[in-house]
Amino acid sequence: MVSNETAENAGAVPQRAQGLLFDDDLPDLDVATGYRGPTACRAAGITYRQLDYWARTGLVEPSIRPATGSGTQRLYSFRDILVLKVVKRLLDTGVSLQQIRTAVSHLRERGVDDLAQITLMSDGASVYECTSADEVIDLVQGGQGVFGIAVGRVWREVEGSLAELPTERVEEDGETPSAPQDELALRRQARSAG
Image 1 (tube, one colour):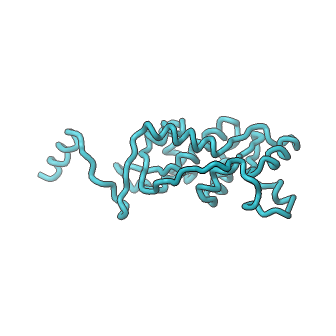
Image 2 (cartoon, rainbow, N blue to C red):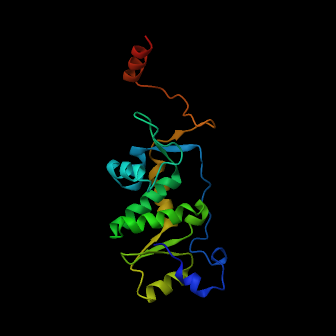
Image 3 (cartoon, rainbow, N blue to C red):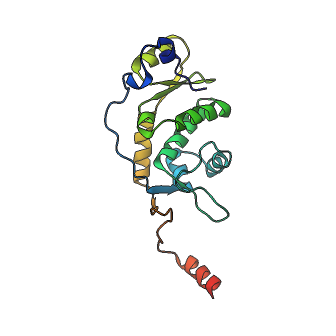
């Protein structure tokens, strides 16, 4: 379960007023750019089977365009891929999928800017949210945190991976602009029209 125990115990300082672990500027996100499943898998370092399972079970669903039936392409946002990569890292540390689901639901409540400014710490059983260097130190000194994920650093890794991968633009009406089709797609289209 994601918790902010240090901040809650201190009680005096509101969470948003705490010091930031990442105070450099992060770029604005283009909300009209999406990434298809295979691209999301490559950027997050997961298999397509994991991506499909996580989408079907609601762990990380594509926020730009969900699958609406056979043949539709899911489109994942940058933020979705960032969360996918964080989930992968948590799984790699041995955190249970149940705990990850709790952590992801907590992360969904945050805006992208807030997300990039936290460090997730885990002891293999629970996930803790830290928004300041003091919280990280308190957690490690208390013997709870043994693995940390600096989400701002993961942000940059995903950004670097996606820079080399194909994107897809979505128009304001939610439709993808018609893209050039390959010869096979054009033949199928002609056959179904004629």
